[in-house]
Image (cartoon, rainbow, N blue to C red; front, side, top):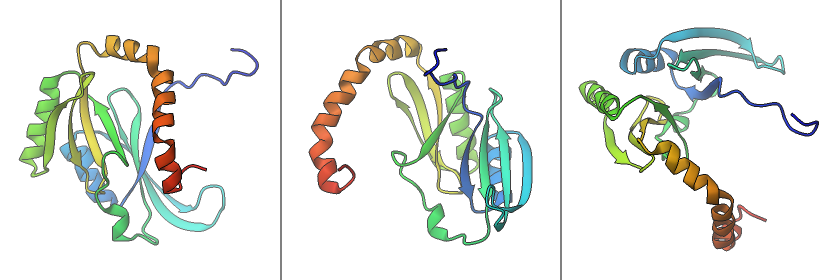
Length: 180
């Protein structure tokens, strides 16, 4: 590591989302998806400010030792925060070993009355998509046999593809007010 290089990031410890109800979220992630509940922590103050704010922080463990986490913050909760979010705005993907595992999750979701669509062949992965009780788009995915080769091939041109895309879309983004 050079003086100016950042320390290496080891991985994702957890990804956190808001939930509307801790028990409803526990039932979905533990009982339906099979993720073990590892912590349900209750706090009375907002971190870093000391401002009164009662909330619960839940952690469900993934098979790789990382977590998906949720905040149940009853104060100021509004239904519009939990409307289904388009997957291109917000989603997270959990990986399984095989396409058979993906399909087993699809069958499990069907058995629980939870609509899931797919599998979709993205060429480098194969996925199903569904919504959790909080309106979050969730993906169960498995790597294609050529996943690593495809990613290595894509890495060769990734910077150039971004440059061309940025050039192609700059005017529309400026007109929409998202770029200066």
